[in-house]
Length: 411
Ligand SMILES: *Cc1c(COP(=O)(O)O)cnc(C)c1O
Image (cartoon, rainbow, N blue to C red; front, side, top):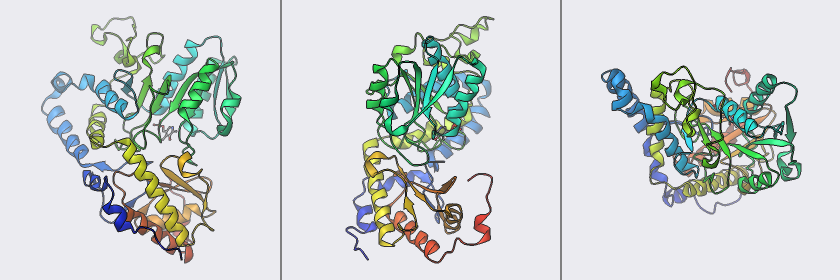
């Protein structure tokens, strides 16, 4: 047995974010290692939910569009998200889902580059990102195509027939984190527009969209941003592109003057053009309140704690001799996001057995046990307990039972 350098208790005592867990309503007997899939409920989000439903909707009725500024909520929330992803005001708007936002941005980007006909991405990107390209290509016809490039050598595969390079900064399965600044620069050297998906980045570590000169980005808010199931997503359009940007889902909320009720569509010239139909105010209000847990917290501190939690998890797993059986398939700490992927042929059953013990992680097909680290509410003591429970499950083959093998519809 390897001795511990620091105990969980010592690490928790030194943790500047330790008290942040109080901002969340988490069940007592649960250790949550899945905040990268669905963040937990912030207490002020719960309060806001009842306020927006009972007071703003219930009592204010339609007057709340003005009185409670529902109408400008997408921009207000967009700017709040902007501060977390390194975007100056007026470049981020909150709307729809990542999938829908990808359709808008890809269409607009292709239109800005009419002489180029290729969208480049990685084959192991999150499936919806690829599916949305496939659907768009089907609409556009044979002239356009998708090209799959290897995530480990992006630079070498950038050619000047590519219109848009669509990448997810952190791979959902392995956790591989791409170098946004370097890749964006190399793409620009070939005249390629960049579209970054921040699903596993926003709220997990510092992202510098402006500084990296990124053209477009999308992201969701129900993972590390804790906005709740199906919370609205966001779009970033760099200010320099806003005048030329034109997305095809030309709904009335993206019109420059929606309440003129004119029969002709005139696109808004700001990032607001990305709005399509009436925004879901209840969900967006909950997200607005949820984002306040980031007040006074630096993303650098979150990133530093995540790295310590991950290193502690691995050290504990090593001490328990788990790493022979559970193979780490993530890149090294500095090249990955806030998650670790372990491969095991019974990963699904192990995950289910772990959940039965009160530790929630997730399974990603075909054989990955994915452990997410959300430093705002996860303690070192949680990690210690989680690994100890995992050790029991694996050593005693506790997962080898039929009840843990039956696949549920959501994994
Ligand atoms: C979670 C995730 C999505 C989800 O897309 P939705 O349309 O919001 O359901 C998309 N892309 C990536 C990379 C993701 O991790």
